[in-house]
Amino acid sequence: MFSALHQQLRALDDTALLHLKASWTKGGKERDIPIRTEVQCELLGQARQLAGAGSLIPAGMSYKDQLNRFKAQTARAGIDRVHGLRHGYAQARYADLTGWNSPAAVGPTSKQLSPEQKAIDRQARLAISRELGHEREQITAVYLGR
Image (cartoon, rainbow, N blue to C red):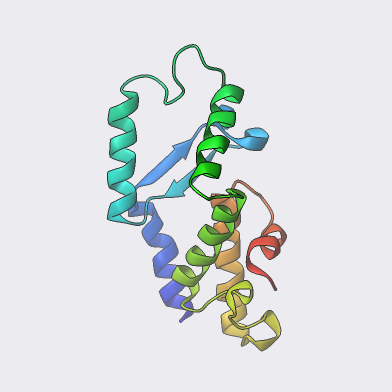
């Protein structure tokens, strides 16, 4: 199983990535997010088409104005806490990389993992931490549980 994870992590080299510049992110940390599905590719293509060579923030609006607009629109759509989407991403990504659910998604706890599974768990958590813009594996406990 360890070699399967290693192959998946190596396969990221061949995976399409969405590169986020430091100036675009909370905390000012650039990061690369794997594009994992065809739907993601299609949506990013639509966003690129909409923005053209410019920004998705309309001319004359500040980032803060656009953020408030986004919050209002997501609230109207019934989405209360968009940070929960990060939790969902982390948990789905963990399952993709390990082959089992995270403890937060009713998967095994770290105490229940074999030594080989613990190595896979750590590699997956490090990858997810980087994708979320963090540098420490420990931060994944917030998203994935222990």
